Length: 241
DNA sequence: AATCATGGCAACCGCACCACG
DNA sequence: TCGTGGTGCGGTTGCCATGAT
Image 1 (cartoon, protein in one colour):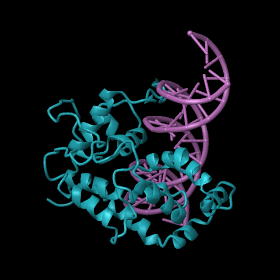
Image 2: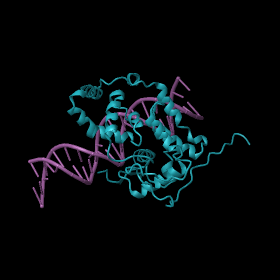
Image 3: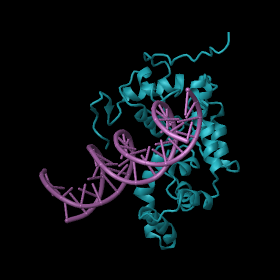
Image 4: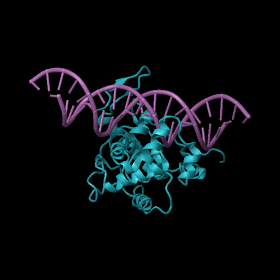
């Protein structure tokens, strides 16, 4: 179902991820955070480009990701959000706890579009989608306006991701990545709040997966699993003695 | 049983944005 | 102000699974 693994001309591995690679990446990020995606694969002992690592982490390995079946509520929410936001999958995914933008996007293309096509009441949505395809897409700012999203939202999102190179503690790094993932969240969203809340203690406590409420949540490998990592470079403030 | 068509999804690619020097 | 590097996003592709013929 996935691309066959191969080595590109730069010697970087591409295509499907092996279980071993997954474990290495997962273990490294959980231990050190993603302080720099570009450098990370080197330190984690992976022959992958940083982008590939990031994608794998965000879409597959990230803790709390749900896999598989969408509830009717989720489907309806995606349709509603797509009507408001257009193809801004990351924003839509941000409102769906445990879903990645890629997954939502795929789900839309494979299932919901069909469902909407069969539902004549949804012509408005179809029109908007096709307009975007044919270049009649709203200006990004227009979309933001119609969806009640201000530029400050996206700025705010960027600011949520602190500059890790500035010697931020690893725990903060990890937290920031999670917070950032629920981007464009609106403070009134109880769903969003509960998601953030449920992970608040995640980085401050040993990772114990509570999948009792959701069997779709990915299980993590045992923490005792050992990999040989290079520690991330230490960022020592040398401006003063 | 074999072949073909379609669905589904992981992963890649290119672009845009932002921070920083 | 400009160039560069890092990151995130959306569109697209590749390939396996499954169903239809």
